[in-house]
Picture 1 (cartoon, helix red, strand yellow):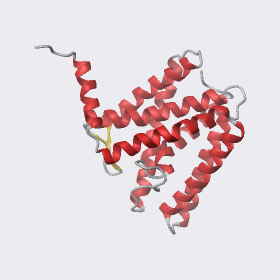
Picture 2 (picture 1 turned 90 degrees about the vertical axis):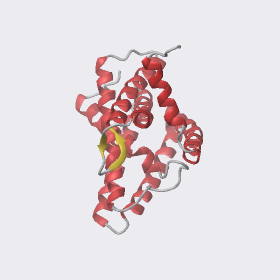
Picture 3 (picture 1 turned 45 degrees about the vertical axis):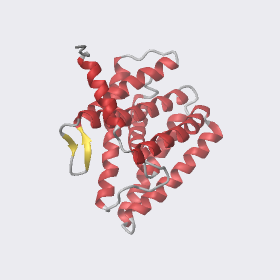
Amino acid sequence: MLRLPSSVRVIAGMAKSVAEEPKSTLIPRIVSALVLAPPVLWAVFNGGIPFLILITLATLIAIFEWVRITKRASLWRNAGAVYIALAIYSLFWLRVDPEWGQLTLIWLMVVVWATDIGGYVFGRALGGPKLAPSISPNKTWSGFFGGVALAIGGSFGVLSAFGLEGGFGVSVLAAVLAAISQGGDLLESAMKRRFGVKDSGNIIPGHGGLLDRVDGLMAAAMALALINLSSGGNVIP
């Protein structure tokens, strides 16, 4: 009897676990990603007015959703608005660098997206101990490390597409930002749990609100902006 290598069996099991996701959830997720990713990447790639429009819309929607989450809690509402403003400005500041802005922001977005995908796929396929059960019961340590691993792979992919080589330092940076991204995700989950809200909104079918999609990106953007600022220049590549 033909016996597949263990690595192939693991990958096949992961694919089966993801395929078993209810279609009512999986199909909207796929469609939303296919519809939203191209215009977002186009705006980031081109910069200028398209990116300014994108960042302005994102700011308005994110603040609206945060006000909806916090309801009448003015302290949390104001603190969240400042957090969102700093995160959005970090994204803007990273992109406007005339030499490295395009690469930096595309690299960051791919790292965060890869983290989300890796966390979702590895977490569903491997399961295991929970990462933060009191905050987000579905997140696991296997998903955490799977997200970090895929983020490193995504980092290499972007740098290769730009004709650059990613060294050990960039891999470490990708891993750190992947961890921070997942921390940002947990932070938003904690806030939603505190105020008894399941999703920040329903603007993205299958995903919820905008904050549900960019919570990790916002945290990672602020971290990368601080790293670049403290080092006196771009740290990628």
